[in-house]
Every structure is written in structure tokens, then in C-alpha cells.
Image (cartoon, rainbow, N blue to C red; front, side, top):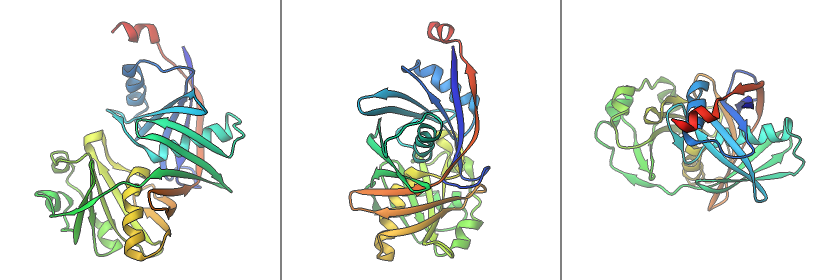
Length: 268
């Protein structure tokens, strides 16, 4: 079976920036094990698969090692493929996912993700976290799957050199570090070794915590954000109470075909 594949750099207007995602359009779902193997073969932070469904598309995301519940940059990249390569005309696309219905709107040259805001609460700094990050945070917050460590300055975020072996042993899937920005409202980085990606270049799901936190901290609902990975991601953010909006650009890196032996995989 031949499948189309696209690779898109999301949350950037420059090739080789932002966060790369592979996008595979389907007419029906492949076996889970096969989708996981394709994601492992692609060996980038996320591979997204989508199928036509209801008034939109079913959408699933895989890292090289696991399927994830929510992924922002690969959702943005999928919308980019639909608009720029598959000639979708609607101004808003609905995606049906393991995290519920998500929407993407065209916003001039940008695309805007509309995601639910993630609840979080203040906690004591977990044992081992400061050691793993190398710098003691000012305060730590927790959601169901992530810790968010807040620091004094952008320099703290830039200078962080995590011990990924130690992070791998901690009791959360992802670790956000963040501080007030120098040229943007806030900056962040995101580490998720338990999902097969030591540092994710740009992370929409992390911003579902970051946006509500910084909206309250800065007393503003519209903000600019940068994720300070080596590839650098840029987002325009809006807090709307129960939801957050994340706007960014995307650039196509490649289009091609992959050949997959579906029957052989199903028998395994």
C-alpha cells in the first residue's frame, strides 16, 4: 500500500525551525501497531494520521514510542496540509481526537488552534525535580500529566541543562519550564523523555497550561510566546477562560509516498 506523507515545520515561518511533524492522510485507520511503526521510522517528535469523519476528521498522534492524548504542533501541521495540499476550502476545520473535539481556524497568514485550557494547581517542588533540572524553580504547578516549573528569568530557561536520565524516573509525562520573556511575554521549554522525546521543540499541549498561568500573572489575555528549543518556536496566544488559542505559521518541508505492507503487519 502506498500512502502520501507530508513533513511540516509548525509554529515557524522559516524552514528548519519550529517543530517538525509528519502527516499521513488515510481513508480508514491502519492497525495501531503499524501506525506506531511508521512513527518510529519517521523518528521525529510526532506523526499524525487522519481520516474523514463527521463534519471534519478523526486525528491521532504518535511519538516514535507511544500514542499521545494531545498534540498541538501536529494538529497545526495537519491543518496546514489540508489547506495547502488537499485544497480544503472551509475557514475552520474540526478534528475529533482522544482529547475531544478540537478546531483550527485560518487567521490571515497564520493558523489558530482552539484547545481547552488545562486545569493546574500549585504544589511543593517534587523530590528530584530541581536536581534533574539543575536549577531550583521559584514555584511548581501540576496538571494531571505535567509539572510546570516557574523561574526568575529567561536566562534560567536558556541555561537549563536537564539530566534526562533523572527526568525519566519522575512521576509525570512532561516537564515545562517557563519564565517571563525578554522580547516576548513569556518563554518556555518542554521535556518529555517518558514519551520518547527528550526535548520537544514547540509544544501546543504545554501552552494549554502556560497561557492561563501567564494571562493571570501578567493580567492580559493576548500574549506572545517563544519556546526556546534549538529550533525555536513562535506563538501568538489568547486566553478565553475555558479555552486557549494558539496561532502560528507552518512551512512544508517535504511531500512523498511511503510503502507499507499492511497485510504482513496485521498478521503479526
